[in-house]
Image 1 (cartoon, rainbow, N blue to C red):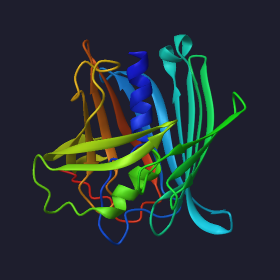
Image 2 (cartoon, one colour; image 1 turned 180 degrees about the vertical axis):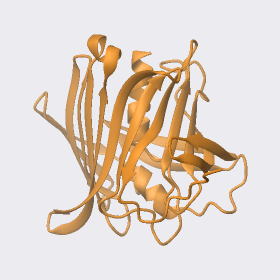
Image 3 (cartoon, rainbow, N blue to C red; image 1 turned 180 degrees about the horizontal axis):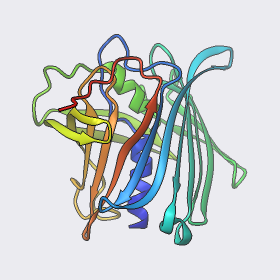
Image 4 (cartoon, helix red, strand yellow; image 1 turned 45 degrees about the horizontal axis):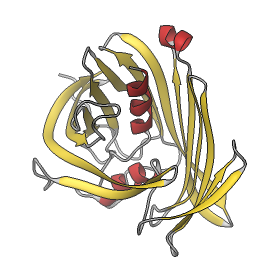
Length: 259
């Protein structure tokens, strides 16, 4: 269950929203998620916040994602993760990505700068005082920028069950072709009320963490915000879930059904 928890924290910072052309988010947006085991045992929290910033004299969005364990799980497996992305306000492509994690004593501190024109990633491994350069795919994203890019780049009205979305993502030292399958539309019950949602299946690597490629399910709000409402990971025994617990600074009205 420990490794599943880490995957769910990471997926909260990944690319699961899809939105209208007028933009799904703006500076000041903030989310908090509550993670639980089998729907009742609290396992951790995660937050995402959008800020305006400057990087190399260019105005960018600076998104900060944090994840940490709480409650009983914290006593035997402590997690404190921080992810940051600086990306272009027009194209959504990232210029810089930071991953600073402590997962049960396993630590990593990386800063990655992207040269989109020349398809290069300049990796600074701060922990080991080592620098390297890797080739990237065209229009590559980090795990945070990808989420916000997709929120602003796809229409959903005409999506049909079985449709797939994909893009290139660079994580640590590798390129990934991340895929997301649309499963349909569903109204789910949240702490805020009933919400119409879009249901997706992120494809994961089977064999190392999950028994099947299709062990994860994601729900995002079917409005202009495309808020991530819930992520569920099915386990051999029970399940791990992350639910939206609080929010502020939304660009559009959050559409909630009260009956």
